[in-house]
Image (cartoon, rainbow, N blue to C red; front, side):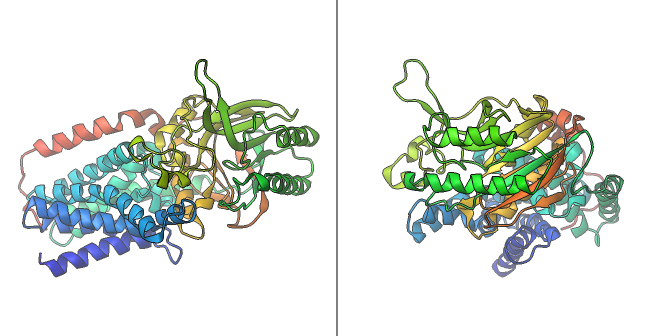
Length: 511
């Protein structure tokens, strides 16, 4: 493969991933599969293993940047860094995440002599393992293939059995088999079989469980999302706090008036209240009194703190407070996975120039408890902001007894970019994996309800101050993936080693 052809394959992979993910213009999810196909072609046709890695890394870096270009925005707008430095930050993040593309292309080079079906299976497993490892190493698994496919819920139903990363691996396997259909009868048959296994049971599953915009019955509950649409750059200004509280109380009052006879769970998003909610002498009593007057439970995002004996300073947490209909704080959840640069600075980068990125309250501490918050019959498995992109956190909440997942987020960081839509589809994967409805309340949009099959059944608007009424169904059964998830990486490694150890077989390999 000459340099020109390699460039064209790299461009195809980047454009495919961009067009497959929400991008602000037009999305066609299957185009995301061009990304693993391009990496395969770049690796398998390289003159050596090092060249395969370099080509795959460059393609992976460019593709990550095409999807996550928005990283530069909060660094510039909130952090105050000049655009060139903000762009360099986005490039640095993309370079790290793009390493997975280099490893995959290297694997494609090393496996180029295998028969097509076995090669596709090995690379599909490798894709799954790479997504899993990247989530562990970089703590920012933002663009698994399954997240692009989540826009078409039929494509992600196997996540209830195998999880989102395995779904990504299976679709990577499928595109590689399809690429070999002309030269391999076995690949053609395997592709048809795999496509049928992925899509036919999924289509029947969705047909057997029609979407419910407003589910009814004893196992359902009413919800009211409140979007304040508060400017991220103003919300931490103490002089603006009174207006923020007034905005949320007024919107909530309007929303409750539109739901006569209901006592919904009112959801205010992540850090909706930009002050220490436990002890503010003016605003906290107003909010607690409001909940008691309306006789409705409230879930509120705000900073919290805890003092440990012997420490001069309190630990600060990104917290979700639960308020009872009697106007009392009855529980809270502290965010466990913190956003680098947004909520804490890594020790090796704790320098003054980067400190403006922090959300106005200093460096947060990590929470440790995944216990659900109970509001009547609702057992809320809490996730805050980008915690919704981590499968293990949702699984821990369900194990602890959650019958609904709830994700409160502040997507005001992202502005008018594609990131809020990408974030929503990532969260939808957790609903399918755990077989739970998911409530997602945000400051600037997109607030939504996602059913247990990954379908968005209620959705608010972006950049609009509003109250969005909804209903949710409470479920208690667990999925196959909930039980199988912890064992999946080990099973994948064993299967990979088994397939790699098999003799070559009779079928002539193709490229």
